[in-house]
Image 1 (cartoon, rainbow, N blue to C red):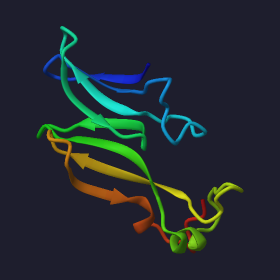
Image 2 (image 1 turned 45 degrees about the horizontal axis):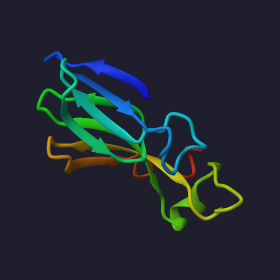
Image 3 (image 1 turned 45 degrees about the vertical axis):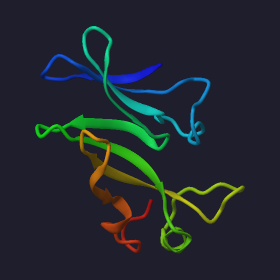
Length: 126
């Protein structure tokens, strides 16, 4: 099923999708996705990135790379420093943080920005 889509300047459609039978590890959190897909108007697959940590938003850049919002498991040291946040009873040691990753057309990460590296654990309470 499609979560949302962007019409690209070249007329292709870029969208998040996830197979309902394989929802990935983040089914309890809204907005998750199993992949990012680009199709042409004839339905041909142009580009695909499969990752169950994708969520909520993406953007195709003018240089052809793609920005995507993802979750990443933070270290237990970082988790314990966070004021607030959400962990589960099953795993009180790990917490997810937001990462913006830039992928080139080959699907390789060329840049990433981790939210917790830019916040003060004393001042920025979750």
